[in-house]
Image 1 (tube, one colour):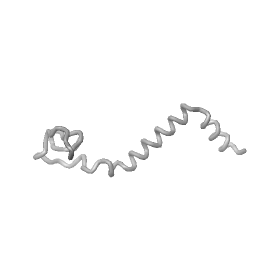
Image 2 (image 1 turned 30 degrees about the horizontal axis):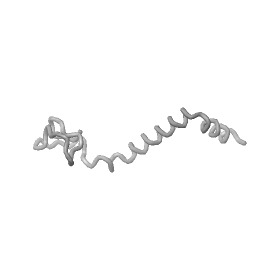
Image 3 (image 1 turned 120 degrees about the vertical axis):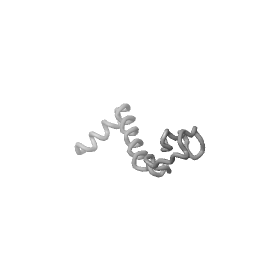
Image 4 (image 1 turned 90 degrees about the horizontal axis):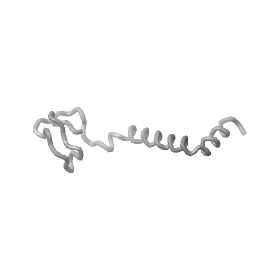
Length: 69
């Protein structure tokens, strides 16, 4: 067995390391596909929609400049 397979086998046996790698992979996945999860540009200002509460269009509402939170 080469050193890579030995390292992967040891990683599979270490439960905490495996959970950590799964969390990192999930975070990278979400960061890569973030434009699909958030349809609004966070820097676009719309003063007509300022300080809106949570709703279907803006799940977390808007700030004082009408930006999506």
